[in-house]
Image (cartoon, rainbow, N blue to C red; front, side, top):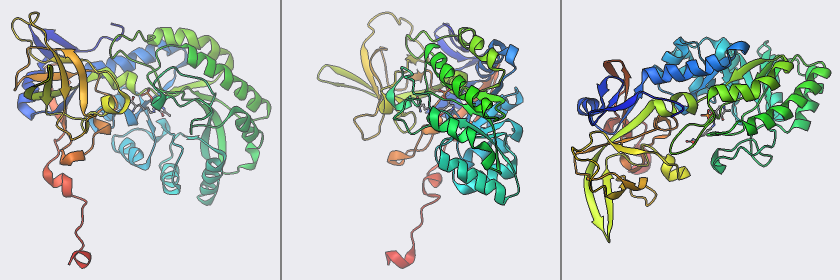
Length: 425
Ligand code: LLP
């Protein structure tokens, strides 16, 4: 494995670091997300090490996992944060992230979000369109401030990933085409409330090869040169996130291979580097543990009906994503009679399938299954669909573990609903 993580089987039992996963499930119930502190820190350090010569600012992408404990531990390890909303700004400040390490991307920043970010003194807005640049400029001037901005360039390169998570092709809503970006840079002086300090790229997610990044950097380098030629003080280059991980049998580039491919292009540009990894840091630092409720057979097919569904982990239903599913405790004679199961949740949707046609057996009610690689875009995308309670989350560090998000209760389900008497009489 390229990216070793700290979920390991010891004498048939799955451990997170030094804690048996089954013990956590017993203590806090299921479904539960479990994260390894060590894996999180290791992944961040690997990226820091690979790019050491450029001393990049590594801004963890909060959208991949917004749990406060996880954000705090990464910030303590020196990470900044990549945010996409006022909500994520609130979280970033709450965990004590220095504003000088916060970058804000999103195609739809609202005026209030721009104001709050300026007030907080964030490092940079990644601006995605000319009208947005106008808005940031107007708001900053009204507040008597100057906003640091990076223009997000859409380089029109194919990232060879799922079409829902490719973002750098011309027809996608993200970023500014190179020609418009150069025009804006030529007019940079006319935006009195804005200082365009860099360029930003993000071409997609779960990208396993360096080649799309290389092509994107070549394009953005042209914009950078043209912009500098026009007098724009472009010091920063933000390469976004997107580094792929292993879910099944992918062979993603390692951070070293990625750095080796892009550093030669970056050095001559003499720009400070920002990276916005999400999945690479947290993806396989987390698992989802679920209990088997029933085993059902129908027309020769076997279903393991579990207590986690698409509302807890939507990736399989939404993207057809593959997640490895393994028993948390291996039955004594595991090799014999490995039956195939569809692992399905309780939600009333045919798409509520966590895994199809997997050799697991023999599976019995009460068994615990672990869904691997669930740390990124797992808990953050959970919902209350079907009146289901969002799962608990636990962080493991060595021999210790602690709850980092309480399981929701039925009270949480109704917290924001109102039954206005006047309309319901
Ligand atoms: N920067 C920007 C501007 C982004 O839009 C994203 C992700 C990232 C950084 C972090 O990308 P990462 O390193 O995690 O690939 N829900 C989908 C993934 C959506 C990615 C959205 N943008 C999934 O579950 O696969």
